[in-house]
Image 1 (tube, rainbow, N blue to C red):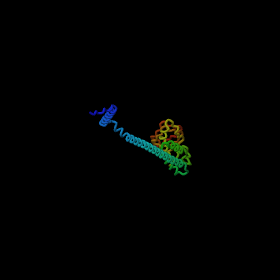
Image 2 (image 1 turned 30 degrees about the vertical axis):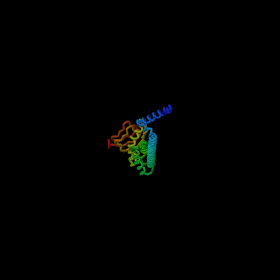
Image 3 (image 1 turned 90 degrees about the vertical axis):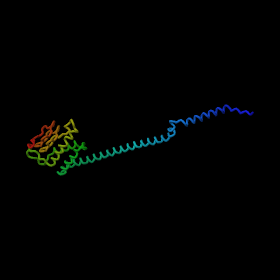
Image 4 (image 1 turned 90 degrees about the horizontal axis):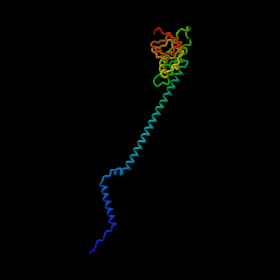
Length: 235
């Protein structure tokens, strides 16, 4: 009888290992891998994340550039408004120095536009300007009698209105130091000052002969040497 050749032990061992690997591979294929999808799509996820981050960076940069542009545009507009306002104020100053009465009156009326909100930088300047011109003689020929009130002209009347409106606004910017709003020697004869807010006004040696002061607030006012001959019409 022919005998069956004996299988080499090494070959047998290799076959066992191969069989074990095949069995393990089948097990891995059948068992779910929780990270298998992630490993498979890692490259796609990474590239998508890079695109999203790049898009967000671009969006933030665009928003920042747009904000800066808007701020610059607002600053340019503010500067332009201030420039135009300064030019208009200078034209009022020039008009008050004109030789003719008409331009002076127009300039005095123009000054009131600088007492609106948004023109705060002109409040004190407008007050000082009105005071400066209200100190000047109203007419080239004053009354011979020094006790006679000076006549009220159209220009002085317009300036009195500016003075009345400008003082409380300028005072709010100069709190605690009323002397900075110096109206010493101002001429307000026959002026209509009823209901005016003149609290803390610094107005020594002024002239208010026959001025209408009914209801005016003169609390803490400095009126040393001021002529307060009240208009009898208003008591």
